[in-house]
Length: 125
Image 1 (tube, rainbow, N blue to C red):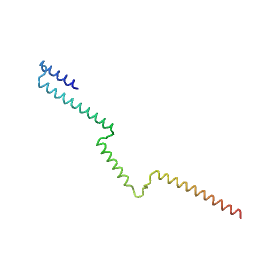
Image 2: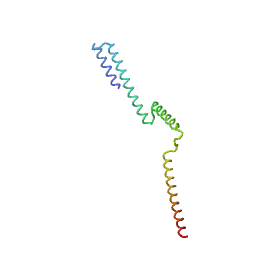
Image 3: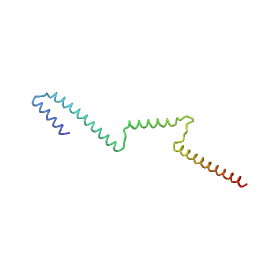
Image 4: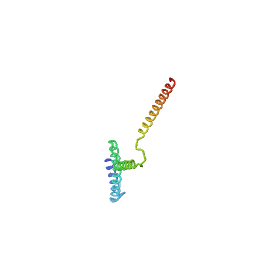
């Protein structure tokens, strides 16, 4: 970058000494060149900082605030359930169905055993 700066200065000084440009034109051109270079440098620095911060696992404040609002919205939505709504999670519902199936099959088995015992007693009389 320093080579570019010195080369640009030399070019403008040569143009002034040759009479191609006036000192005011050279000063305006240098001023514009410095603004453009400063803007390009600013963009490069911002990109590098963002990349480094991202590597460290940090997020931008705006992204954090948006995430925070989303979490708050989800929390408030989950606490506003209708009166008759079930509060058991899906895993508990599956476990409850499994338990009721097991109970049904056990009661069916015990009913069959009772019927067999009753039939056996009637036959033996």
